[in-house]
Image (cartoon, rainbow, N blue to C red; front, side, top):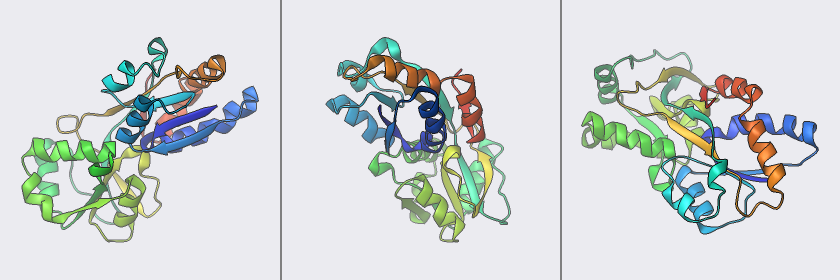
Length: 228
């Protein structure tokens, strides 16, 4: 069974796959990319059995490449802030506190939105919402993905690291927490059975497994909110 998904859900899905394989005997080949890139691949009709995408996805639905009725919300994840291990944790409890923290930070690493990284796109929207995009531009360090942004925070290249909470597994960082919903809307991840699935029943069984109560516990452990 082939699966494609954005990087924000990678760690959780990779943890879940072995249990599904052991239970069903099906082998799963998973590939991960950016949020925007994943949607484009599905819209173009590339062959995957189970695509996971982030709303809004009108191009995915209109392409005819997914079974519309199979849409299954797996989890949602917030963009958050991390700092180098042992560093003081800034206040991000309110809109005003987030604005102050970002304005005072010497440098901020986050996933490059130009590559379609959903966390990066979301953080750009946060900066616009706060009205400080121009003021912080000179200290933004755009990384190739969430893991790279966390590595920059861990090694001191950036004072603050920003990405999805689910991508903050770097042992060299301390997680400060999620940005408040007043400035950052959580990103939802929705799975489908592909219209081109070689074995639609097997694809649906994987989707069912990824939205099961057992999966919910794994999503929570990775800083995500289960969809069910």
